[in-house]
Every structure is written in structure tokens, then in C-alpha cells.
Length: 433
Image (cartoon, rainbow, N blue to C red; front, side, top):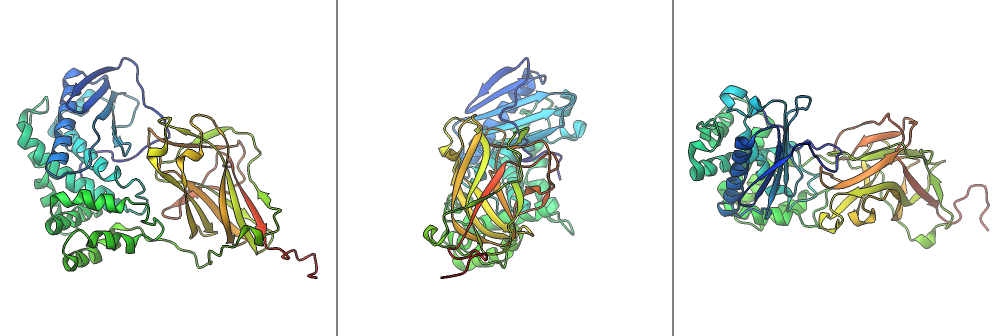
């Protein structure tokens, strides 16, 4: 697989460097430092051409302007990624890393087309937590390879400063990978997307992604809704055959708990909730976690408790208007992190750049005596929520989601608190009348 960093977003609200300059092309702005104007112009032209191919040839949803930040920093990790909306970021350690692949081992031109492919998917499918890397990266690999071919047709082999025939990095490369005895998971995913293109055609992907991005696609158990939306795009018989192969590869297996997510009316409870907390109330740091979530493991004194609310100490970063970014998820899980209930809340629940306690009301939902509460924001470098933590960890704070791996968080306890209540008459110290 080509050496490009893909969708690895750190906890940062912005990436800025000293001595920046700017260049522009059609629908592209590149802010750069340390890479030189020649390469900056080539990057801008590449993204502009890739955007045009994605929009014109495939009808994919493209931002009006793609903003690129490129910087050379000898101490940085070479990495290329995007924010899922309209921004792409590149850091390199040396200008030599921008040379053609034969000299640098880096496939930057392919990588830029790859990132444009990601934007085409992530813009309409904002909550893609159900996707495996084979689905998300496989799509970007497939469409990125196709876009490379389209860019060459528009720009020829003199697009990059040290010219080379980059058609070798497009579908020619993908075809070789798929012909291997055992292609890697991303190549296999790309092959499945290629098969789907043979059924629905190039220009139906935009309709499919819009359908898959609708709020009625439940991330906890999306298979049936995804299938229904897919079958509406073309030949149902052929698409059923394709989906039967693709679903096990593209949809993350959900760890649903056997614990029943029972709900009751608020009037069925005592109205005297208790607050469960690990933190000491003093924020000592903050984190935004890409591809993960902030979770706390909590215990009640026995069974029969219902979560009625969750408080999170945090603040939103990114554009002051967050309504365009949709929802984040609050997950109630059993002690093994298997999902009990998954609840959406709007980003606007958190104030822009103003950390404070935010209360998320929950329809009273039963939980076992040992359970986990997780909030996941699917953040990027340019939008998300910072969740704060205190200084001393209890060992019961985690990073992870019910859809992926989890690990202990050792830098403190997340400032996440949970209100629980019981049914009326559930107090074992009182006799029923």
C-alpha cells in the first residue's frame, strides 16, 4: 500500500505555522510554509483537478472551496489527513519527501486524490462510525485511484514539479493489488467498491451516500437500513448479491449487550436521583479524541437503577455555528462495553470555547449495577468537543467506543457524571404499604 497518512486526526482546533504563504487555484486555497511556492502551486493544481474530476465525472458532493494546510517541520511526523468536510492537512519532515515516488517513496499526488475521495464520502455520511477501515479506506483507495486517472487526463504528466507518469499510481496499481493472491483488507474493500460501480454506475454513489447519511440509519445496528437504501439505487437482485458479500467486510460488528434496554416514564421514579462521579471537579486537562470516545465505568449499589441524565464538562471548538455538524452519540453500555442504548444529541448542546457542565437528559433507561457511559463526537482538526479531565485517575476512565477498541485513560478521570434513580417503592429499607 502506498505510504500516505490517512484520516489520523489529533486533538487540535487548528494547525498554524510561522512564515505562512498562500496560493490559490480553482476552488482551492493552499496555505504553506517551508515547502516552496513551486510545490505549493502543484498541490493546489492537483487538488483543483481532483475536485473537478470527482464532481464532473462522478457527480460527488464537493465543497465549494477546499482549504489545504501544508508545512515542513523536521520534528513532525509525515502525515496527510482531512477534516471530513473541506480541509486537508499535510506535514512533512523535509522538502525531499515531496519529490516523485521513485525518489522519495511518498505518493503525494495519489494521496491528495485519496483525500478528495474521503471528503466525497464523509461530507454526506457525517456519522460513519459503523464503517470498517476496509469500507472507508477502501472507498478512498478505489475512487482515489480513479481520480488519479482523471487528473492525468486533464493535466498530463507535467503536473508535479519533478514530472513523472503518475498513471502508474492510479487504477493500474489497484488492478495489480487485486490480482495478488491475498490482497490486503483495504485493497479488498476497494475491489468491492469497484464491483458496486459495475452494478450502479459511477454517478449513483452520490445518491447512495446521501441515503446512507440520513439520520434514520442507526449506527448501532445499521445493516437493514443500509441494505434498503442500497437496493433503491438499482437492480435489487444484483445489489443483494453484492451486499451479502460487502456487509461483513464494511459494517463493524456491533457488540450488543444481552441486558435489555428497558425504559420507564419519569413519573415512575422516585424523583430523587443520585449522582455518580469519579472526578474531583477540578479540570486539569482536556482532550478531543478522533476515532474514539470518552468513557467512564460506574457502579450502583445493586440492580434496579435507571440513568436519567448525564453531565459532561466540556466546550466546543471549530466554527461558532455548530448546527451543520449534526449530532454526537451518548452510549450506555454493559461492563464489557457492549451496547445497551445509543442516543443522539446535537453539537449545539456545548458552548463554543466556553467550558462548563452540560446536562444531557436521558429517558429513564435501566442499566446493570456495573456499567459504562461513553460520549463520542467523531471530531476532526477543525470541529469537535473538548472533554475535560481532573488530575488524578481512579482507573475507571477509558477511551474507546462500543464500536471499537477501548483502553484505560491514565491521565485523570473524565469529568462525566451520571444521574440515576429507582422506581417508586424500590427502596429495600422501606416496607411496601
